[in-house]
Each structure stands twice: as structure tokens, then as C-alpha cells.
Amino acid sequence: GQSLEQPSEVTAVEGAIVQINCTYQTSGFYGLSWYQQHDGGAPTFLSYNALDGLEETGRFSSFLSRSDSYGYLLLQELQMKDSASYFCAVRALNQAGTALIFGKGTTLSVSS
Amino acid sequence: GAVVSQHPSWVICKSGTSVKIECRSLDFQATTMFWYRQFPKQSLMLMATSNEGSKATYEQGVEKDKFLINHASLTLSTLTVTSAHPEDSSFYICSAPGRAINNEQFFGPGTRLTVL
Image 1 (tube, rainbow over the protein chains, first blue to last red):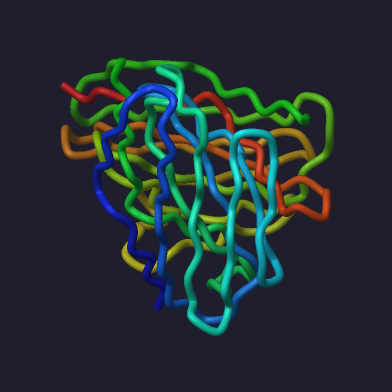
Image 2 (image 1 turned 180 degrees about the vertical axis):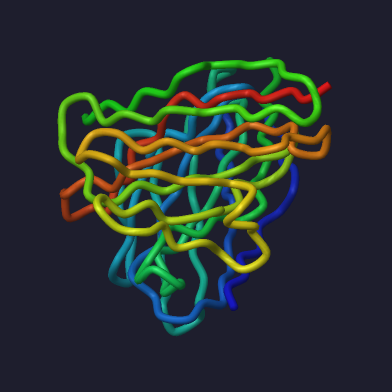
């Protein structure tokens, strides 16, 4: 089966840096992704790591270590609008081939 | 990026009735679409993989006779919740995979179902 673990909540202030960790156990592994979801909205894609190392996209960076089954999302220069839920997700083998399986999500609250 | 739409965005129905939710890829073709369910403050749980022209593949524990999926064309998949009960009240989200190397998946805006 598949399992992904990430912290349930993180709080920070504007301008700070936050790291959200994710560890995973999957049948087959085809990359680790991060999605952001605001309350009542659809998940939106943030980043993807297929290989070990750091990927940087603006204020957001994501890291993967396949040997440790571990990754993280780094959010810099936090803004109030970054308050949302963040999900790590792995593309893994399932009944139909492969599918995106999500972690339980981390609620980030940014205060002024 | 690619756009996925869902209709309706919200629906309230009586217990025992059936509800159909449509998922459309607006500017691309999707031979595969995924249906997820999300309870408040919880994760997105994969329900099934919808395949154009063939039967859907359901995840373990998801009743295929209760959640009927039809992928009639390359741009449309439908989920019908049959004989809905209050415990089926949830946020249902469809998605379609993109073709980019970054494995991005495009999500619809979701349908909030409330069963009275």
C-alpha cells in the first residue's frame, strides 16, 4: 500500500521561511509532487521532483531524496496569501496503472 | 495550463436520490481522468480511474455500483452517486493528467455534495 506522512499544521509569520516535510512509502515511485489548496478550492500544482535534489520555482523550492523516501517543500518570504493546505503526492502504482496519491495535508497559517 | 471544469459546483439532494457530476477537459483530450473525494480538513482520497471507452478502475473499498463512472468521450467523464446517503456528503474533485514532463495533474474546481 501507499502512505505519506506530513505534519498536520504549521504556523509562521509574514516574511518567514517554512519547511514542510514529507516521508512516503509506495509501491513503485514515479516522482513527488506538491499541491496547494485554499479552502473550498481545487488543488493547484506547485512543484515536482523525479530525481534527487532541489528544484526552485520562485519563492517555492522542493527537495527529494529517493534513498530516504523523503522530500520537503520550502516556502520563503511568506505572504498572507500562502495560508492554505499543502499536500505532498506521489505518483505510484495502483489498480489502473499509476495514479497520484496524496498525503493528509499540512495546514499553513501565516500571520502578520 | 490546461483547464478542467466540473458541473455542478454544488448540489443538495434528498437521501435515496442519484446525483450526476460532470467533469470536462476544456482545451485538451483526456483518455484518463481521476475521481477523488475529500472530507472536510482531510486529504484527497482517490476513488477511481476513469478510462475513455472502457470500464473505470475502482480503488479498494469504493463501491462501483454506488459510484458509477462513465467516460464517454475524450473530454467528458461523469460520476453518478446512486441512492445517495448523508454519509456520501463530501467534496468530489476530478482531475486529468497533463502531458508535461513535470507530471502535473489538472484539477476541476470540485463539486460539493450535500445529502439531506
